[in-house]
Amino acid sequence: SNKTPCPICDKEFSIEEIEIHAEKCLFLNSINEFAPKRSSEDRTSRKSLFSSPKRHKPSNDTNESFASTSVADNNTQEKPEPEKTKKPLAERMRPSSLKDFVGQQHILASNTVFRNLLEQQNIPSMIMWGPPGCGKTSLAHIIHRMCQEKHNVRFVKLSATLAGVNDVKEIVKIAKNEMNLSKRHTILFMDEIHRFNKLQQDIFLPHVESGVITLIGATTENPSFSLNAALLSRCRVFVLEKLSASDISTLLSKAITALNIEIVEISRENVKSNSRSTINRDSISWLSEICDGDARIAINSLQMAVDSNEGKPLHLTLDNIKEGIKRSHLLYDKKGEEHYNIISALHKSIRASDDNASLYWLTRMLEGGEDPLFIARRLVRAASEDVGLVDPMALTLAVAAMQGCQLVGMPECDVLLAQVTVYLARTYKSQEVYRALQKAQDCIKNHKGPLPTVPLHLRNAPTRLMKELGYARGYNMKHKDESGLTYMPEGLENVSFFQ
Image 1 (cartoon, rainbow, N blue to C red):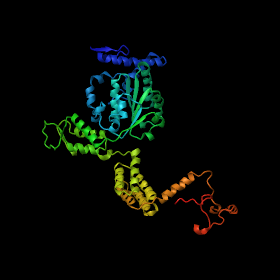
Image 2: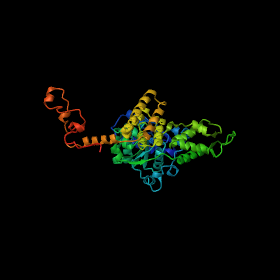
Image 3: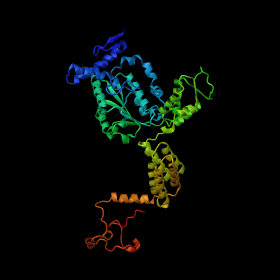
Image 4: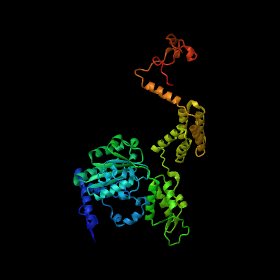
């Protein structure tokens, strides 16, 4: 046998693996020096804790997760190929270097800050913020490969959807020992970091600040709202954008080549049983444009079309591709930033009297699954704020549309919302009441000293004592120009909110 037993744990490994394993095994057992002495049974149970994951299995796209700080099982190492073939196509197509990465040229172009940091392997704590499928995890994968080339850096990947604070504490504990014993620095990649609440995010603060770990967080949510302000101040934020149609097309072409499928200009309807599978270039273009800048959706849709005809040559037509994708993936998170961005775009388009743009943003929200009552409430607001008294019927129509949405619901109420949206965009606009209200609010908020009392002649006098005190004395029901009375508080008689 070519296997050698480990002198520490007595497990057998090949000659090529024994040195790496012994180093890790020695490190893991060295943790005992920092813990109180226990019985042999406790030591045995602690050894099993590090030899197999306690809560989570290592993710497919990285071998340097918390669980993988120990050597993998022999069965996994002897049969890597079957595991690899089970990976989704999107996972198999992840780039391993910056030269293979597609898109995000605003941060990855030559001489940009982000690229220079990666090339110099000087990785700071950072937050990568961008929509789904734009390359956040792929960039982390590239950093992971860079760490593998540098023996003094350890890369750990966690997902906030699965991990908890205790997992982070364990990683930090091992990171401290790595630093003390082998001067090996730890980079922690936390995917979906916004899933940790702000109290949980405090676990990163002292360790990022002291340099025990370098934190790389990935999020689809606006860090200004979803991340702890103290943590955000210690991390550099890099904004990733949706991939363009040309970027998606490039990625699809690479995936098609990897699947051994030929790209053709003209459809081949009759494919021989021994011929090579083909796909029409028009189908690639359509898929690139329909996936809303999400590379994962594009590649998974391609894989679905291929898997549905697995084992035989085929020609992938546009219909095959359409079966693998639906527009339900539109980037519209009803609790995220895009939710507020699009409703803002609708309101501002109405204010600018652009009926075409107003209808577009309305339709985009409805197709994305937005609650019609949320839209209706905003239209009621727009009817009063932007149309106002110049067309009082606008408010009546908006309220009627909201009631109609409550009665009939989707999809029938879509035309009600469309009618009111177009009406509000086309009618005359007046913000007189809205501006006057803002002035009145500013007057009250910025008033120095106690607010003035109500003039006696405007007070109600339901009792004899109040009448004796002068309440309602001299009040009459005439017009302000004829009554001889003032209706503003003392000191504000000459203030006008309508000028």
